[in-house]
Image 1 (cartoon, rainbow, N blue to C red):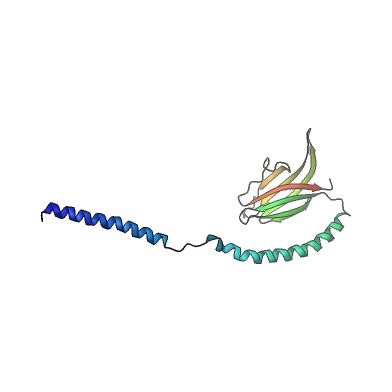
Image 2 (tube, rainbow, N blue to C red):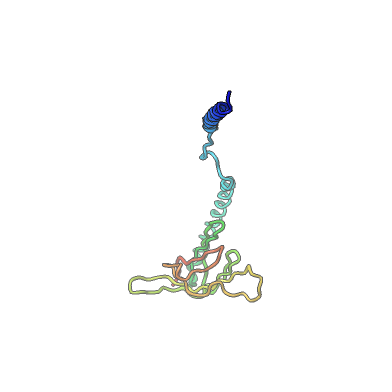
Length: 176
């Protein structure tokens, strides 16, 4: 055999090997068992049921306390501000009820309400509140307000409380 005939023979054998190997690899990929992703549960859902049980117990105890508070609230004439607070890391919201002049804490934030009133516009009325918010996580003695100003219930982003972890917005006022 000539050297040229050997080259053709080697090329044909190589071509058959390459073309047949891709066919076998396709069979191997198709034969792998598929996993049903709907049957898998994320790891955070394992603890979710336990957290819901604890929260339900707290809600039941808070309901009886809330009924007592509501009966006492009818007697006083304090103005209360209702706020919603969001923890952006856990995505949990909390309702905060704050009397004017009172301080409350949400995480490292100290929230103080100074005024709450209705703002009457030509078209509609809006609930507005004057809030002061401090971030106590900084260990400085020169604590500056994180937010000091009026916030609006209809458009909370107009004067937003700028914090990387927490969000606050007013929902309503009581006894105005």
